[in-house]
Length: 483
Image (cartoon, helix red, strand yellow):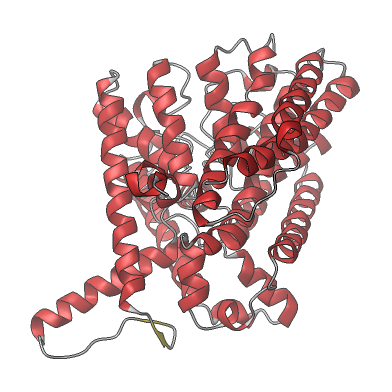
């Protein structure tokens, strides 16, 4: 293990991350909200920490192996999440303890969107901006991680997707070099963010709110600058814009690249994961709309449709924005939507969950086993599109599902041990492991009232969910640390 090379790289990352403290400080100066000092101090601390860890190892350059890559990826999220919490610890308002500040920072960087804060609109503009910026940076990190890094380590949905799936992603590999891949992803991500911000602004948001909500929408994060989330604006047009960009951001970003390069929208519909994702969204919207109509939760059909479309897409893509308290809906719908977050977005998107391609393969494998019961001697191939998927890929997906379920159960039991009730523990685990955000019970509105021990456990859940389980789980195996 090349520990000194890893420390050198982390030092560089922390030093680079220090730059992200500058925009919030500028926002504080612009709005004169008095919240700039924590960010200036955080900038200086990050530079110092980065320099101290980088300088002694600056000349230590060795070729990194796969195991080094796993450790760097895990430390990347843990270290930057911890450093990202520094200004929230230093800020006088909100007055957060260490557990709450770290929870908020990790929730932002992993694009989970769970918050410990109340009275959000009363916070200084610099703090509000910083929370949104964390989500935006985390979303970019997720894309590069999923598409450029994890495939090289041999894990992640994109590896099995790009290697085994026909169509645009297979036939139009983005670029052979990671740097070029990351650059093209950055262009797409930035273009979506600018377009989303302009659309929000033209729909009636202030420039500040438009930029902040564009950050968290394209990142599928869910942080808002108001306690009422998107419901604060009470605008069906803004809701529709948000739904559109949530859907786009939950689609495989390499698929976006293929569409842009090929200048053909039909490329989307040639992709089996996209078609499945679209079908899931339509089905969820219809179910929510019909149940809301049947139970007369809202006075008219248009209002019911507005809330049904928004909440179905927001929760199932793991964004967690709200136009209303979905926990107050008939219990069937909140439970359905939380379970839909286990599916999440497509591989290589900013969405959380297990990813559509994995769930699709699990479904096809289940159908194959049923057919084998009827015809034991028949040979059935699992296909995505027109290409057969190798059994080793299916086995890897089953392994991922088993690991996901095991981690979920362990975290949920740990939360119950800290004193949370069953519904709160279940929904909090789902909200953080799926990087969703809102839950039910005590965490329906926010996570501020749960014990600090529960917050630390949920931080671990956020990192597990963001790193797609295996990347973090492999560090707990003895074989990983043996030379």
